[in-house]
Image (cartoon, rainbow, N blue to C red; front, side, top):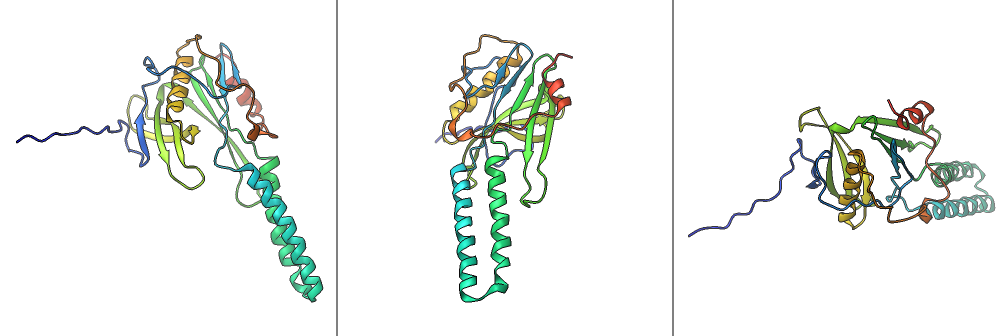
Length: 246
């Protein structure tokens, strides 16, 4: 009697990511999926800029929480005055002021796009990262990571963490000439369209292969949830490097 055996796909990069779903074609190989971007900021013969919109934040919920905090703060202050608990009034005033400041900073100041740039003349990938510490009084940190495109591989993961559930396209930095992972970072996120991530990877690879027969993005302009903020400006030195030839 014979038994059927099934070969399940296995990741080619080491160590494996727990949420791994699929390895994508190497960035120097022919791409098997038609290229397509959701949005595009800039494309010319030197560099390509693609926005990375944050889908894990409900921007309407942020501003609602600010309004709710203002209402609760005044309610507790008025209640404290009415009941004569004056000594307790500073506590809700301080607590809710911190929450309100954090919410307003997130909604009006923190960038909603953390873009990537690909310079095909330099064969470099530039990733804009912005991190706002949970402490409202601390200054946000802007960091630009620079990678050699030849060392980048593509993976699709499925994240099930509350608030960011969905498929993610990851760029994976490996040691040159090996499949040994040094670092993983997100290139794009999707709630349900896994195929869209394959199309994005295909587009990036084909651009870096100097293919100019690329279609326009699926969406023109910017999405409503991106307003009113754009990404903060790139640091001057990195702006100059990432948009110029060697």
